[in-house]
Length: 371
Image (cartoon, rainbow, N blue to C red; front, side, top):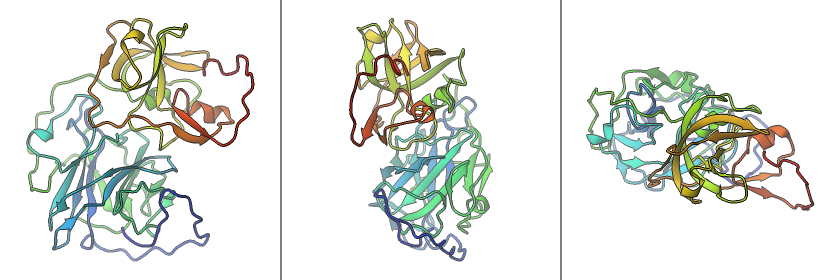
């Protein structure tokens, strides 16, 4: 998918009149997203790591220098998260991009197939889905919602899946699964995600050298990681209250003294693409607060509860593990106007925020003391 000029990041006025969709064409004109496995590492997963596989249907190698793979959440409207690519994709060949793992389950395809690129952004494989963008720029793009088949010169190809608000003509509405991938059907590129992709259990990653993973060992069961945004949910209270969960995040605040007896953690790479669920949570743990520092990347296990409107995890001694953050991007403060509604504040609960605009600070007494 490559057509008209598009305005990245900086908001520009879009023409009010709808643009006519270009005629369909086969995937013999440009590099395409060929396959996307977005639920690696979860319990029962086929593979440990997620991946996106590109395909070059042309008769010549294509340089990917200056290109990027970008991701935006299913309901996001801001700039996507971009990871620069490098190297080239051979004629009639593939290019393999390694993603993150939700936990430690599934076969490790990287033991025999070397990825051509690695990203730290976590692509959602839950019931909401997301948007994958192959771009001919490293600039993070603010793509419009709806169908974008006629909106962007920088967008080489785009896959909107499950409930994504951004797609080519029609969203590929299959739900992400631990044992299926979104695979392009017979190499077709008609600029219609629903027509061009299908969900299949017959898939394997292939890199630019032509190596394809052929192992079948599903791996040993491991700890299931519940992303923070799933713990928070989209309502006033967590949908997981009373359950014990394990999650990961960067420590963004720590209160070893002063009575709060806990710390806040936030998902890696979050803060730039916002939706209706918060990406941070408060960890109430006098037993472990002295073991963390701002910037640490940790795994915690604890019970989910609500305290005066604040979603929190109660973590006992032994429930904290410091992890290696290599290759991960720390969260950034969300640049937003002051949230005036309960729903807007709930969506930012415990997150790093950089309010935009002019403010007058007064004594708020006990307003919003905990949440």
